Length: 517
Ligand code: XMP
Image (cartoon, rainbow, N blue to C red):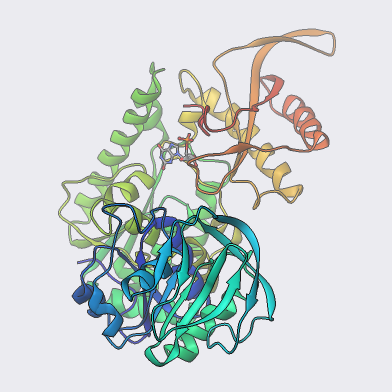
């Protein structure tokens, strides 16, 4: 069974998901208020919700209209279950409609920042000014609240922008308090969470660590665990947490594929062997990976070759450590939510570390299963992991092999690694590292003619790729300053032997992908 971080001592608020992006943002805002939140799908039964002993329930926004046939609903017993409920946007419309109010397709939708006016006393809006703003995104409008509810705010296109029945602890807001564009939005959530639900603000980073360590110790007992460490933030924080719980009974396996970025394997070694004193098996397997990649040019065959070699090596190590019963994985909460609440999440985390054997008889330990990425970083910081690991940009499992177009050889890998290190260094120096999703170098499978000194050269071009993105599903090519591009061009040609030209990739995703292969 997977470890859940909350073993029961934190007050819980359940977010009912009517549209995954809305619900994740709400759940994160609740956590920022130091209250533990869990997301459940909208078709979860009332019994499933009650099983979490929630102190409050939040109904999220969603893309549907309550009038569309088959629009998602909610168990009507919720309103009288004695638990405070806050409905947001679609959730508010659902509350209004279910309890006898009116939701109409008025034809006047509202999108974006909208002025709202407070009307009379309110529990959740008590911190808001009389005239304020809120972020709206709705087409249908609540035109009359249910009996027993008072309207506490209105907007030009939403007569009932907020309504409440404080005696029943039921609240609805047409706007989005979870969005940064709603000033006082977080205050409203605070009022709901702390004043109405009575939640204690115990969900702090130290308490996350304490709960996780307790849960890991309870799950693993006296047994041993293995962890495939990739050097990325997720597997590193997962390993550090498990190490805190079970110490030397954790063996970390770091497979150095020879396809890592510059300094990456030294960083992992330094952090985990020296700083954490962990049992770290550093498998230096570059020869095996280059042999497996030899002669391959097809991107999918290259990926497969790297993945399979990784699995074989991990299996060999596991065989030597056959007393281990557990495998540590860095699965995150968004993976759990987005894969349908626990059905396919393992596939994605395997993918993250370059593929792990599916047939190995090891139970999973997933200490990050209920954490968002920002929480993972905060926990890592608290545990003392270095900034280079915590803020490392995403890096594909097959490593540099998918950034070397054509055949991957040792010589071409060295050229790319050196070029990539310059790109990373200059981006960091320009203060852009955290604002860019990724910035790296690509080595195409061509050579070009140049002239250096009085000599004709025939060498590789380097392509710089830098993108901004929220989630890698779409990406925009970054408008890097000309001066930065100029410095990169000079340094790459002058400092990396074998490079005589630099190009900048100005393709967004779609139509391009972020990686070249
Ligand atoms: P693309 O190139 O599809 O990449 O736009 C989207 C994001 O995923 C990363 N990526 C991978 N990550 N194994 C991984 O763990 C892979 O095989 C892989 N391929 C791409 C990529 O770096 C980007 O952040």
